[in-house]
Image 1 (spheres, helix red, strand yellow):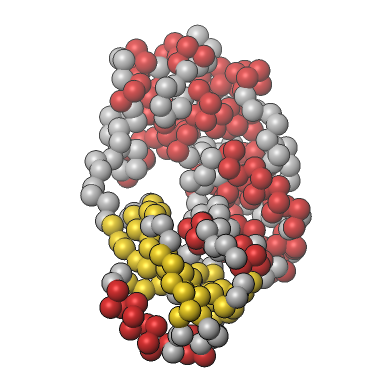
Image 2 (cartoon, one colour; image 1 turned 45 degrees about the vertical axis):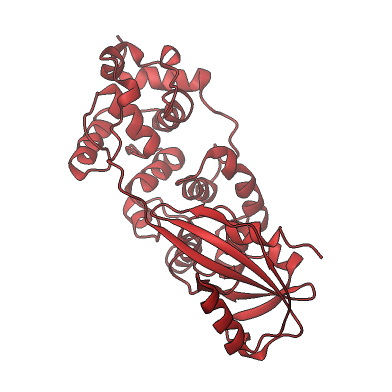
Length: 344
């Protein structure tokens, strides 16, 4: 039987993905794709990637952009710390590497938002360096092939998988192998309904032989997801809405959002009174839930048409925007959903 890496490389060349817009591209585009693909599916990433590189075609262009511009292009993609780290990294590359993405693995690790697996992927795909990756797809392939019992996020199990990932590296064709491992996890060894009969390494897959593929990798014991409730105030003066810029860190950091208050009619009435808002019309929009990684947020949007712009809520970091302008600004997905419900 041929070596594991030989089968993966041959399969990738015949059946793997070869038309992704960042394949065979420069380090900047591969780096950008790796960051965008964290926690996000390829089909979702492609249009964002294409729009992003059109506006910011290289590292100098990204570094010279404002954070607002970068976040606007990222709006709807989620996990916004990725965009802020990407922007900071571009500026760091300009300062420390003359605008050229570093080829050194350690220099990559020193950039904000780049971890061991991301740095290894760039090293292998762009610079043809012999480095092992261990993203979610590769963890799943290895956990099934080795019949690893244990949650892959546990340090001991993850260390075991890193050892196996490094032991399976080929001496050459590292880019094809790395892409092959990504493609296997994304298209064959999928989380549900894997296509085992099409897998090039099925013949010695311990998980398959033991009939455990559907049970591997072991999922983390689920904890009760915390739930929060919040009211968002859509203050409208004609076709303009009041938005506040969030602090640079935390959830939706640096994005524009309507004023947010804790649930309760008394709290809402108190906010209106304190702010000197003269309400002409109130419309309670449909409640909905937005799920984050670690909690669920139940959102109650309340539309308040005002007689005039209340001075008390025009604080530093807040701005009245035309609703259509706001829809093209750096706003999170739930805010976009609320604004799209507004009609004039």
